[in-house]
Image (cartoon, rainbow, N blue to C red; front, side, top):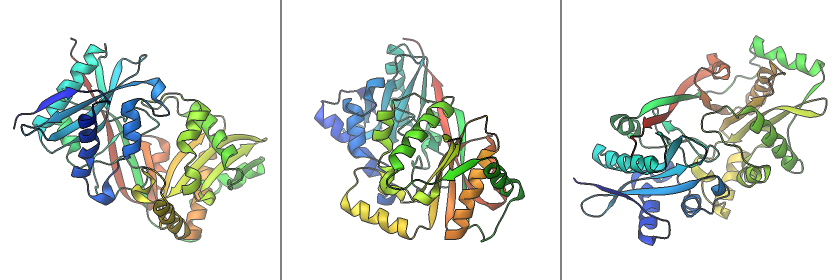
Length: 360
């Protein structure tokens, strides 16, 4: 089969419609990770974060004119690499190679020296590729068909970042890990306070988490700084999803110095607009949650050991409600990837890929 790849602008209605429609043909309904409204905003330059980058969409058609692959090449003016994201492709190496040849030429014309991805335009949206243990995706998981890693590697991409998620079973009531359980009373004795937000204090806590993330996550791959207003626009919907008892903020002398954010696993209901039916599904899950996703942990470096105390407090809560959990998207080799290792039932793996760009 011969494939043709080309770039287009978002005001081209047929190309935009085919670009947005391709994922639905590749996924089961309960595995579809797409947010069409968000994708449309990214392609049209109207997303909350669009002022930071330019997006150049690429589509591949087969000999019958049907869409076979797509991606968005994202250009940041101050970065030597271009990102490819919103990547979807049928299981055909020739279609993938046509896509990436076009993406590479696009990146080269912009003066970039490599393609890195998958990155859906920004660190704050979605990045990384799932490489094993496929099935029903958990909330916040980068999800894709199981053949994508093979396609990327056959097209000359190499891994440039590896991540894991740990699947934990139910924590037995009264379970304690000595290294962790000692930390919490030690920090409390020193004057630290661990608090969970409520509906009235959630906005203030979100602001505190923003300032900690901007400071603590700045060395993460693909990270880019955004304003507090932009962060709030992206993450304020967590107020409807979060179980506040599973969100912990650590304070010392009145200052927020650490956080641990977990949410109920609502599958792909978090993607797209919050419709009344989705809200009802979320509320039902929150009332009787069988699994939580441990999403974000951050501790100021001068408060060494506080991460173990926060984790122990969260584990006590999990033991009390009898839920399972997933420690999500930890950079391989990081110390928190080994937390409560005896309770890990399964690991999920993810990668970020890169490929050099030939000069024009």
